Image 1 (cartoon, one colour):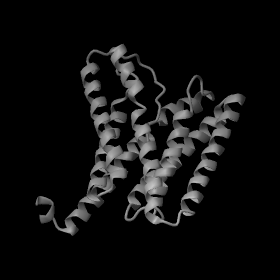
Image 2 (cartoon, one colour):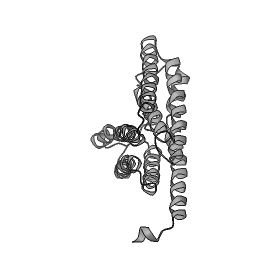
Image 3 (cartoon, one colour):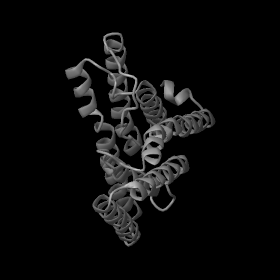
Image 4 (cartoon, one colour):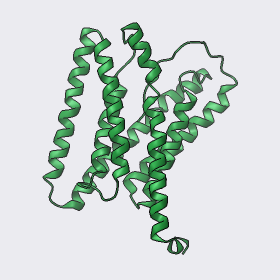
Length: 236
């Protein structure tokens, strides 16, 4: 009954506000790897740092950006804007990684980058060949949902490391906070837009974000952090 008393205009305003907030909070996630790449550029070496998280993140951003377009779903342009920006950031990080990597890593990352664009092209062309709009929406929706959940689940290994070492050194506070805020904003956006492909994965992201923050505050005072720059893996 309460939902029925809310006007469509109010629902739309809440949805847009949540979407804009999600775009703003996502910026915190996108810029979080900058210290790591400043180190890579300064040392002209990728050291033992893996570029794979950025390959996964780029693929996720491209798929989710495609899901938000009018070709796939209606009135989800804010999903496209945030993921398009995310794709630009991830591509920039990958290019920097390739430019500073040793020959073998340079070749492998370049091949993976081409593979990402190839797979994405197949997804776009294949989905456009599906003439039934509802089937197209479901196919890309499930795919974007799966990639989002996998991205949000990626910090589980870091959370396990925090519990084992009783140190939050490799789980930066602002990264965890940005994850929580962005996920919560887009969960609300999905709810207001009645889109399960958005609110379900972001709901999972919200729960995991809360878990990260709880771990951070629990172990923060117990941690004895060294004054060094950790290699931070991106989550988008």
